[in-house]
Structure formats: structure tokens, C-alpha cells
Image (cartoon, rainbow, N blue to C red; front, top):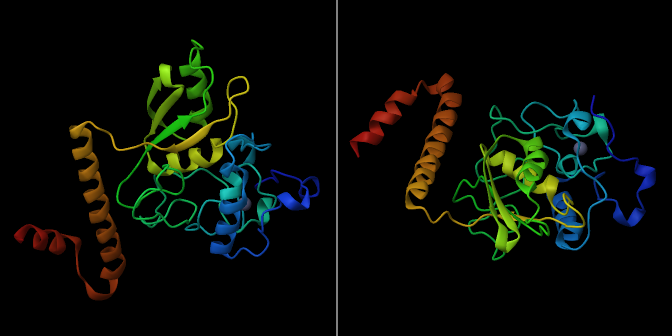
Length: 246
Ligand SMILES: [Zn+2]
């Protein structure tokens, strides 16, 4: 079973998220509006430990990942109605939502913070707030901290700008890592400020992303049709050939 990440008695009442109601949008709005991630200068007191904190909860298979679990401070443990584990490639989440069940928006926020846009699959995080990019070990340090949350495809460090870009294999892994590492400290007294990376200026890479987005849309349609096909016998093959005639 999932262990308690935080002893409820140890949290001052002011810091307690309104988790007991478990109405999802209220939960999200309250927490996202009032939590410390809106203050880039405060280091979080909690951090998820995937090995020790993961475990079964009262969540059903198709439920969302617990946002508090990702932030290392869920105090419901095995009684939590959401999943206490990393998202995997087996998971299916609605494309307009993140793995925590929060709605994406059409456009990114101006500062690229927040849940992100449903117009593009973004697997790359901007890591700001690094103070020691001159540390010769910074690549290893970033890898060590961020690979806990998924398969890293690429790390790019901009040494003169004290920031880095980390690309995950899956968008869900980036979503999870963004919440887990926000306002954490990895070297000295730095405090990470994590946002979504901007558009990749490489046109080939953009084309690939567009293709991936189209594939994802097609897969969604296929999935919906397969779910329905038991009733009305529409098959995926028919739909695909219809699409080609256009
Ligand atoms: Zn939880």
C-alpha cells in the first residue's frame, strides 16, 4: 500500500490543502492558486521518493495521478482516491488534460508555467533557477534528479544562462517531473523554477512534432471507435480508408 508521505499532524493548518473535499476542480484551483510554487523563492519542504512512496491506493485503474503525491505531500496514503505512482506508457489520459486530470488550455501562459497547451505535445521542460551551472558535474546531477521520474532523452545545459532543457520520452513524465521538482533544490542553495520549453526552432523537429500530434489524434479516434465497435461494428480500417479518399 502507499505510505503516508506526510504526517497530517505535522502540517500547520494554514498549509493544509483542501484535500478532504476531493472535488477535483476546487482541489486544483485552491491548491494551484495558493501553493508555494507561485513563489519562486521558497524551497519546498517535501519531495516525492518514487521508490518509497509508490503503492496502491483506492484509485481505480483509469484514474488520475495524485498531484500531492507528485509534490511529495499527500497525507491520505492508501486511502487516497488518486494513483500514487508514476505515469507509464500504458496509461491513457484525455489529450486535453494532464496526467493529474487538470485541463490544458489552448495557449500557453505568457511565462510558460502552468498545465500547458493541448495544441502540442511538449516533452521538454525548461529548468531555471540553477546557480551552479559551472559545476562540472551539473549534467550528472540533473540526470540523477530527473531520471527518477522517467526516461530522459536529452539534456541541454546553457551554461551562460544558468538554465537547462530536459526532454523526456513521454509528455506525462515531463508533466510529473515538472510538479515533483518545482521549487526543489539540487545544488547548493539553488531553487528550481520549472516551466514548459518553448517551440523547438528546428523545423525538422517541428515537423516530427506535428506528425506525432496527428498520430495521437488518430489514435484517439481509433480508441474511441474500438470502444464503440462492439456495438455498431465500425472498424478502424474503414475509417482509415475513408480518410485517404479525401
Ligand atoms: Zn494522494
